[in-house]
Length: 307
View 1 (cartoon, rainbow, N blue to C red):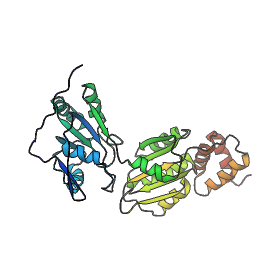
View 2 (spheres, rainbow, N blue to C red; view 1 turned 90 degrees about the horizontal axis):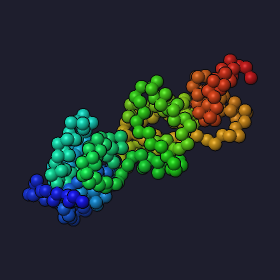
View 3 (cartoon, one colour; view 1 turned 180 degrees about the vertical axis):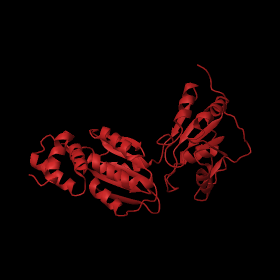
View 4 (cartoon, rainbow, N blue to C red; view 1 turned 60 degrees about the vertical axis):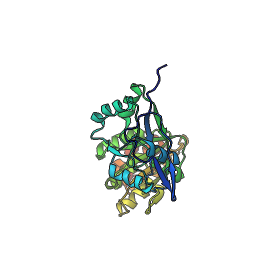
């Protein structure tokens, strides 16, 4: 069994300490390796003591945006140097970092908020480190997806994390259609400027499922709205706030084995109040796991005034 190189200390002059509530804490030296460290998604108090100790003792911190990470480090009086590691330099930057790790450095990887790799850069570096036999350690902590799921009131087991949907509506609807029958609560991230149209597409493809829209979690202007997708989509069409970071949580499909024709027709009538014939048919088909073509014919007949 090969032995790991001794931990190096490229900058032995830097203080390996952090401060919490006015108390200065010494960070113990780290074993060589890559440390994947979760950071707060908003509230700076949502960081673990282990994460602070790792960030203080690391030789370097790889940050998605060094300015964002520096705010966290300054808050806890951590002087460790940072280096940019983001989506634009991830592929080219992995090689030199792996070389440093092989020389025995302890390097921390963080994203702007939450857990690295989860809809953030870092996966390529972790794979490269593992391929070279470099230890990879996780320091878990805040996650916007889990925070939204926990506060949504929707079933948490099982859940399916999709991350960001395609930015264009046609591709987004195609992807949502592939998720229609996933028997799990769905969790999405979304850019603020796309939230209204994404909610429209969710309502059209998944129907009036219960959902939760969480905005600015753990921050000063945190907002959580719950309701069915049709109602939530209407709220954002009418001008609900679109600034901030968003997580959308959607309930799994209903158990509909015994759904009656009357229940399906009632759902179609309700959907036609706000949706086109095509979208109403798609939404109700998703809700009751029925063929969209059959429901389109029924919806079209209703729209034309036939029973």
